[in-house]
Image (cartoon, rainbow, N blue to C red; front, side, top):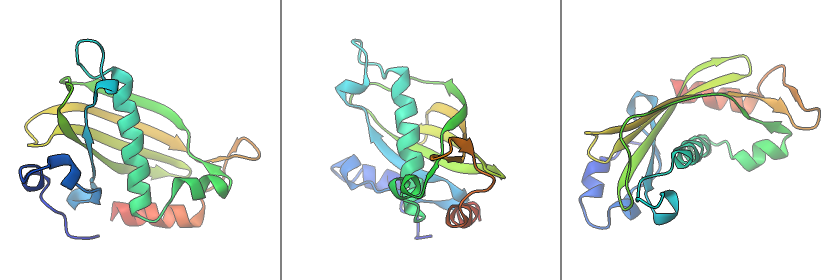
Length: 163
């Protein structure tokens, strides 16, 4: 893994979110910066609840890409990773114009089941906006059935992610 950079220092150094990069960081968390735009919110300027799920998936796909697993390539190989379980706890609303960090990591991998943990935090880490967990299962796209095992490249990369 590359050396983690201080997101707070980057955020305070000018054009904030444009300077933030996707990165795998200490404690196996992957950090994905987000900005709340008008299309993410309701008429009151509060983030719509489904937007958080989109950000969680974006962070997961970016995390996989950071360890060499391009989701499009995975699908082309005939493997999909659909969500089979989802748990979300909304803690503090995000509002239009705010920026935050989506943190994700794998916390369990048993057979073809992969459990991901999430936190969405303010840039200064003082507010936790959301916590959640998502379970994915590897499915053979052609047969439409759960695979017996993860593709070796995926399993090896995920094991390295957890180290």
